[in-house]
Amino acid sequence: MTVMSDMSLWTGRIDAGEGQGALRWHQWVKPLAADQPAGTVLIGLASDEGVKRNQGRTGARQGPSALRKALANLAWHGHTALYDAGDVACVGSDLEGAQQRYAHQVSQVLDQGHLPLGLGGGHEIAFASFSGLADHLRRQTPRPRIGILNFDAHFDLRHAEQSSSGTPFRQIAEYCQRADMPFAYCCLGVSQLNNTQALFEQAGRLNVSYRLDRDMNSWNMSAIEAYLDTFLRDIDHLYLTLCLDVLPASQAPGVSAPSAHGVDMQIVEHLVRRAKASGKLRMADIAELNPSLDIDNRTARIGARLLASLMD
Image 1 (cartoon, helix red, strand yellow):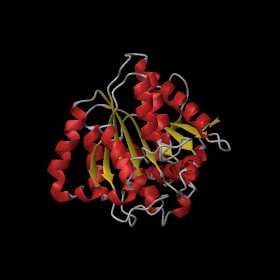
Image 2 (image 1 turned 180 degrees about the vertical axis):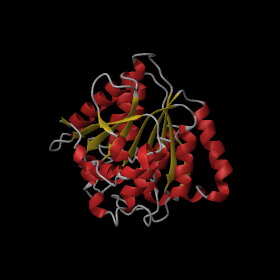
Image 3 (image 1 turned 90 degrees about the vertical axis):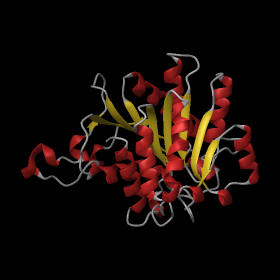
Image 4 (image 1 turned 135 degrees about the vertical axis):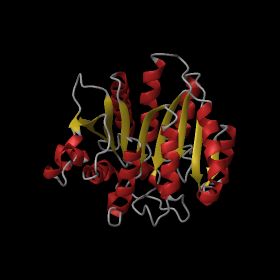
């Protein structure tokens, strides 16, 4: 079920005496409609069924609303149009149906020339986002070279009977195999202690590029940048997905699986901006915000800042 965005979430301070130079996100965003100029479109996947299936702590279905609230009062520094397409809600346990509807909407938004930014929800959003992007690109060329850049403490390559927040990149690999497309997956911030040896072996079989969280430090920045640049060089289109549990628990407590180590926000934001500067970004999303576990809206605020960094 797709619902129109609740525009009442877009409220905040108004500095009327300072003119157009004092606008905030809530004053700029508009509901998505047909035949609008190309811009950025926010689309939510209100679901935590994937987290539930993955034996995690539920509550992420409220993530899209919390991200909108956190974005609403930020100062607006952009120039492009910004639209809200509402949420695709997971009804009951029908995660697969919700993923299909979300993918279809992403594909339509791309067909209209917009840049979709997904709001999660659990990381089951990733398979839906990639599917929508791939379906769009395959109408232009049968074997698009899509690179998947995931900031995450987990590979999310699990084998399971049903899709979940732990399976999206394994599902993407299978999609690519069926479509005879290359599977190019880079995961930054992987926690060795939170991924089994079986998952590392699976990553090896699939030729996944990755860096461990303990290697994602400021004194290694030049090496990290070179690693990212090499990955970006060999793709034509970038899908960027960011699981908020890649951040330290002190910065992002409102997730299903808080990180004991994590990667500092400054490093993540820098690399997100670098990836966007490649000019290859076609789709991005933020996943795993669980407002019921958040403290002082820290995680929502950090998610909002990272989304905003994709708009600069």
